Image 1 (tube, helix red, strand yellow):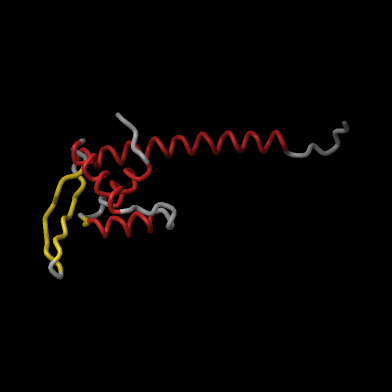
Image 2 (image 1 turned 120 degrees about the vertical axis):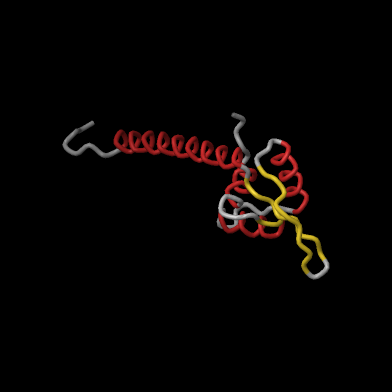
Length: 116
């Protein structure tokens, strides 16, 4: 499985609980990343096209709101499987990093009673 960019992962994760339109995705991704990831429209729609081409998302419905067309996207079953696998991969990597940091901390801890 091809790994996902952070932006693509966050877009898919934002669609995990419900379909969303473009602006809804922008705000949800910003919230999920504590404002660290700010999607511009051009970046978002290019990512949506790539994710749709891979079968990870699909158009859900179109609505007109104040004269503007809003296209909603939904996560496909393949997309949900991909998000779950990517989440597990990141969890495993974080766990490995924590183990290494703990080992480093133990090695760097002052040794009382040892001179030298």
